[in-house]
Picture 1: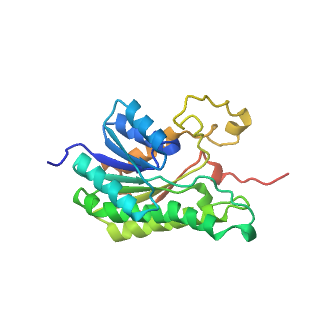
Picture 2: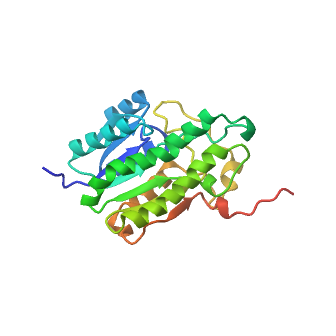
Picture 3: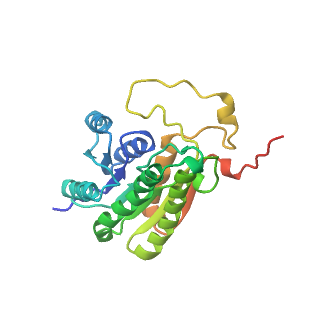
Length: 252
């Protein structure tokens, strides 16, 4: 029996931005499955939620894991309407490029870029049945850089390109869009009771929007992009950064 409730799969959903997306969609009435390599944080979120959510432990860089994650989601929920490829290695700094090991480079590619490809590959047959949607989580580092962040920047730039390729290949049955977050304060979204120190006034004021972002800002954009209201939007990269990439900054 197929579910009449819309179903979303969120990768990397136990902590940070992913956790915010899981909770936002669940509170909006979605049936949400999420995966993560962090078993403890994932089980804690699933156990503490009053909503209909499923946790599946797994690594998006492993195709057998991805096959299992998607299969468990569909078997549990009866279908699939949206995939949010959020899982990623978030630390962008890998040191001088001449000292960057192939292992570090490859692991970031495997999780940040190959992972979304694998999840999409296995989810497409299910999404196609429901004219579903894909949202990939890139970064403003696909558009601008700090020193010694080559591996991370390359994966996020690749994810933006993968998004528009998928939109053309999978349309009109499936839409694919991308979000590039800027500075999102995820310290309070790690599944612990530890309360972070407040950010400084200058941290907030440097943003044209007047503040640092929150997981809720990204979750709200995800919710819009997978909704019927966004049915004419595909192949796009949405920068959600409080205006920072539009701000011209030179040292005085």
